Image (cartoon, rainbow, N blue to C red; front, side, top):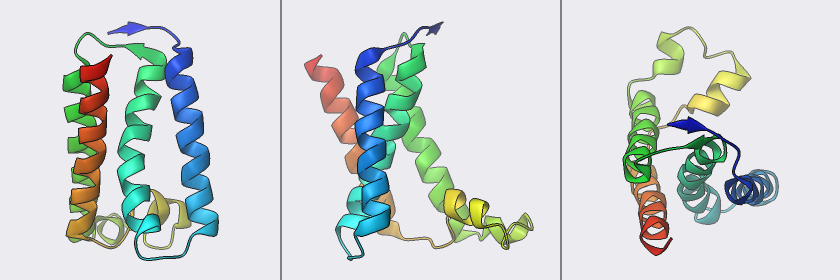
Length: 122
């Protein structure tokens, strides 16, 4: 891994972040907000890391991001926010989430596939 700044991934990160904020603020449905938002967050996290690090194995990073997303979702199944005494923290409940949904795992996997396909193209 080598520290460097990528304009390409900075642009991807910025666009995705703005889309995620727009989804969070303005979309209150049962498809785009929960599923598209979760799918995009995996790509957003990948772009965030790639913005600052030139990694030797981007596929390994993609797998790591997916496993991180899975672990956050699984922590919700075990009510980790409450177990850590953070249930009253708005920040912790937003970042870590509080409700497990297996469809989120599917959305994360779709985001991973998008990253994987991008890596095949470039």
